[in-house]
Figure (cartoon, rainbow, N blue to C red):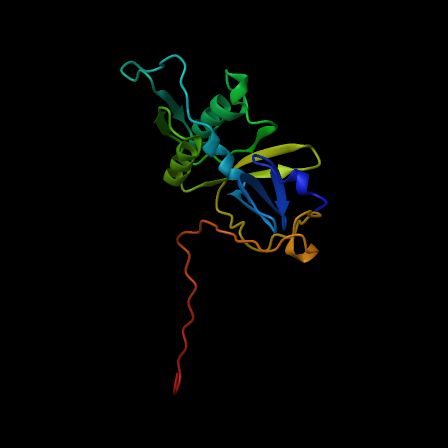
Length: 192
């Protein structure tokens, strides 16, 4: 009840140390149900737009060449961080770290979701990306990541507002995208 006025669409919440963008709210007399995405979901809010055509025959496409990191940074800067149209800027989002990926990469985007463009570039270069919050500096950090599993043993946990531990959530459901993972147990012996 203390934070009920904070439960609105497009607000960012810290739920058990995970940042959450609220996309949808259902209310009744007994409870409020929120659904949304992690900070990476912000990139779903922008499509890639184009300015002057740099390559003949590619009218209407935003064409870029360079390392994978340079290609990703190009699309992030033009469509989310410092776009020509200031209304398209995602507030306080900065590029914190860039992994090179492929040395020679290229992409042609035309009115494509920014998440799809960045995801395709990352997938082809076997790197990943994440957006995290830097609460102390009031910023959101975009990073491309190589070769680090960041899904387990994360210890840097600041104070949270919403948590079943504090009794202010009835329930929580998390869905995470994991691929190429295998958990297996092999048992051998008599009667097994």
